[in-house]
Amino acid sequence: MTPADKIYVAGHRGLAGSAVCRELHRLGFHNVVTRTRMELDLLDSKAVDLFLQSERPSHVFVAAAKVGGIWANHTQPASFLWENLQIQNNLIHGAWKAGVGKLLFMGSSCIYPKLAPQPLREEYLLTGPLEPTNEWYAVAKIAGIKMCQAYRRQHGCDFISAMPTNLYGPNDNYDPQGSHVLPALIRKFHEAKVSRSSEVVCWGSGSPLREFLYSDDLASALVFLMQNYSGEDFINVGSGSEITIHDLASLVRDVVGYDGPIVWDSSKPDGTPRKLMDSSRLFAMGWQPRTPLREGIVRAYADFVSRN
Image (tube, rainbow, N blue to C red; front, side, top):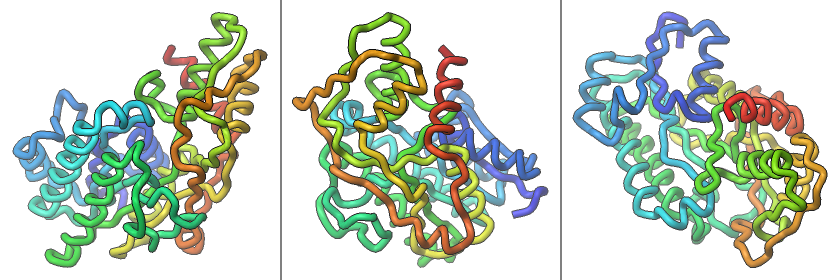
């Protein structure tokens, strides 16, 4: 990948896609192509084909997806399955037809079985049942991995996949019904501070362990893989450290500046008990994350305040 290459970033307004665009521009890649949802409907296969064959990008980052937390996945299973399958099928198949030189498909750590050994290694894929609260999204992402592998085997395409851990950062989704745990906590504690609420109620027991990666660190990893990796196996992208949801909530409360108590509603689901990814393959290639969790939350909160 050279500065002269035309690079298409699908999902450039989202958390991961916007970070990829920032990283590419930081590194001097200025021929970056993007389209808004109004300009290009990724659910429309004919529109995607026409766009890719017209623009002829040499590299494609697939960061576009329908995403959300436990509640969104629970209430919209058909949408999560169909839309994600449609988006990635259109982009991957269209990239092959348009002769794209290299494509990186971004998945999610939810592809792993609910009770897989920890930390999660790439070879644990499809070794057990998925977590029921997000299985629809997970099935779609697994299909994306397999599609890249299939096109590599049948057509010789240099299509690779990367599986990030839980992400957060600028341009995150803070919608109360659709956000993931960290942005949801940022919004919850901010609103409690503004309204002077006497307490904040959080879902579950607080005991699950989660790993978090700042979005700009993910972007540096994805660009690194695009430049340095061409294998069939997907690659985990994580920070290598974990924290309980209980401690995460306390950390977010401190960053936001809310001084009330936290009440845990154990009648609500916890989700997967623990989810730490083994990113040793990526680390061995020479990449490392650079943003400590507290520093990243400070930046993410500043982004939230600036847009609300």
